[in-house]
Image 1 (spheres, rainbow, N blue to C red):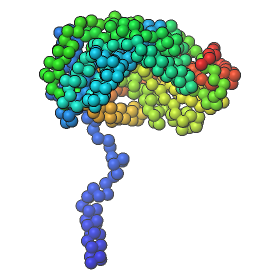
Image 2 (image 1 turned 180 degrees about the horizontal axis):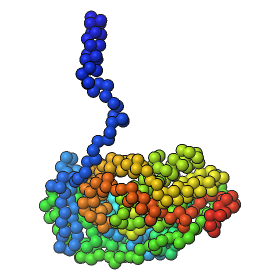
Image 3 (image 1 turned 120 degrees about the horizontal axis):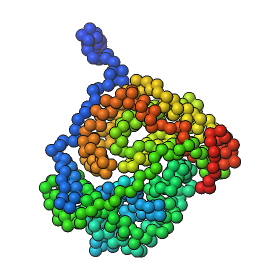
Image 4 (image 1 turned 60 degrees about the horizontal axis):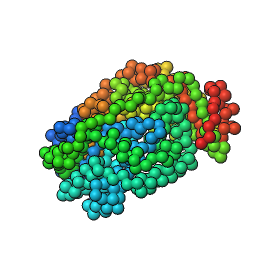
Length: 474
């Protein structure tokens, strides 16, 4: 019997080979990549937009697959709206908004959300503040009531403000033990000293220590205005129902919008600047190199992103990672990024190495930036980052909430509402000329700010010849 079965299997294999069966076809990694899918990210029939009479925008993404709903309000202002003396106020205000609203103090507000099995969050970034609440769709009435209270009627109790301020100050104090954070703080100060962008979004101890309930109340009044707000709903909801509830909860909210703030200075630094943050105890130096970047709405943003993926943003496949880690063995990681905000944010390269190797690493990074700026990007490099970009794009849009958050971000940043739908086609349409022009126009190693955290006694002599070196205390 075994001999008969073996003979049959052997005959089948021979027949498969003779017939050209795919049994011995090439493995998947040797096949050409599939065609890039372009077009709408979501079914347009489930995505609805409207505007209330007071200017408040509505964005509703219907998805009834689960009996859940996420509701929220985002305003198009954040930390960038602060003065230097207010640095950290947006973050402080957002946190305090969840510590009591309407008739409920902090404990009562926490209790009602817990009873609903809901989640309540408020978060502030550079360009926006958002409040969101999520739970079961059968509790939509209660969820809408909580959202309306937190957005429109936060209590800003003095005792809770004191607690939040102490918590934020403790977090800022803890950052002093993190050399990577110290390097980024010093880098931003080197670029934007005297402007709000020169301080972290979460603020600095000297500004946060003065924040109180009165300051939060005033900041809320000037940022949370109907003409500056987007109400969003995702999940097991219907557009008409959300619109009716929005009218009832927010329809009488006065129209208004904050004044724009001055953008950070352009073309900074104007000349090479080197800063050493003295940490004599460190055996490993933290390094940040960079200059001004671009705004999120810049028309060349796709070409700039692709260029950066090739140079330093592409994880293990980037030129910087290959040169500094793989070839020289001087670091575990090196990463480059453009921080794109409504106003131009910074461009920075961040890495670390043993203190004696600091100068060598800086020289290699500058050489790679110079090489990219001079041109010579290979067609295969562009093709690789294009394929990676369109392939990984959908990973950030796996859930309905992910899609809604991305659409809100487009609105906040002043991008076209179809920017998600057209992203993959725009990535694939970028040419070598586009990407080389991005490197030529947007990389400025000759006038970069260079910040190193480590022992100044060793680092200052090693950095001679790069430019004038100044030393700061952490």
